[in-house]
Length: 427
Image 1: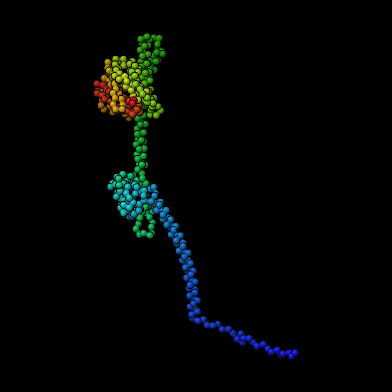
Image 2: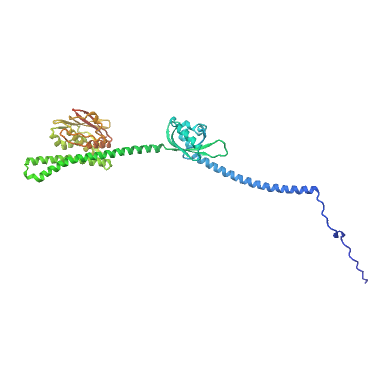
């Protein structure tokens, strides 16, 4: 086998040995690259815009929710609210304000708020509006407003300027706090406080008088009892009898005064029970006449029961007894010797009108109104020098009014008096 002689390998590519030169970029290719970059940037920008648009939609929805909440809070707030411009023209108003003024919201908007302010308070309102738009802090004032149906409300007006950069016109928010009930309660409390002060002063004065009236008979009692205690052996039977009668009279008078005082005090504190039942007026008067006869005999005074035997009233027995007993006792006290007392009654509507008439000294017309007035404390001496405090008539008045009745007096000076009162009759 012949061996072939190896030939040297030919170079595959002679150009490899040469340096590679970059091909020049054509202008069309360069423009295509710029377009691609621009498209990419636009795509990125579009994504950003879509993201921002999504955020804006969320923000808009949140704003809409907040706006609805504000509108609901404004519209349905229990306090009346107004939005006013610098001239006091109503721009917005809620339902509570519409209800207070008695005017539909659509008819309130565009009207001047001062239309509903009384003429004598318009200056107060003008100053209020001026202060609201000239001060950064809340302003307030008290005035009245008149509704469509002429109702007057005492209000506290509070206002604050709104900082709304979206609108050029200045506005303020005004709230109304209704003080009408508060003012009524305040006036009532003030009135009660004044009356309480007067009553306390009168009570102090009254108890001073009572203490003085109690002191005098007690001194007489002490003097008589001391005489009996130290000199009874030297006194005759007639003198002992005289002292004893005097003691009995004084004690009886004191007992009546203290009993009236106790009843009146208990009545003022609502401690006396009121238990009205069916009562025979004729029988009650007979019992009181029996008790009062000893005092009447001293002045030779006759007492007549001129009530029909079947007359019935619906009354508390203790209060009824106290009323009639006090009136008959007074009739004896201010009656002349050999005078007369007549107790009578008649039906009038749903009441029994009962009267106690005497032939005594009578009462001056100027003093009649003082008899049942706690503030006047009118008292006078009886025909035999008897003293009184006027408490019995006050007690009668309170007891009678407790029954839903009334008491009054008819009197002629020097000829006598007639005390008349009403009690409910039984059905």
